[in-house]
Length: 81
Image (tube, rainbow, N blue to C red; front, side, top):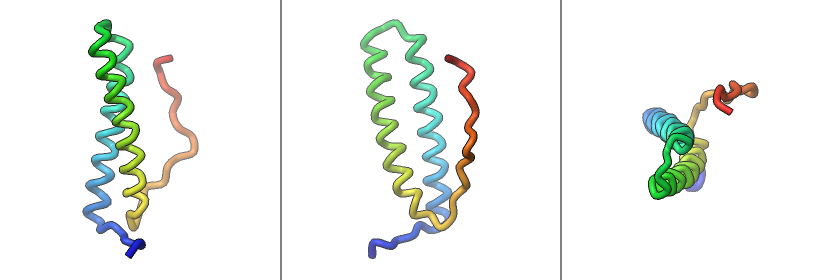
């Protein structure tokens, strides 16, 4: 029973959650540079760590999808350095 495959609707839902978590992670990382309160910055850093872990777990589940969108080899370079 280890060869379980996700249904199409489950794959799409996981894909949507994965996109949402990735967007939240990017927002938390970018907002850390604008925050001066150390407690809030620490909370945001904790959110980044937890989001990174959640994304890795979601990617492991998403690997069971019967179809996947190809990941491009060339990714855009970030605007902010």
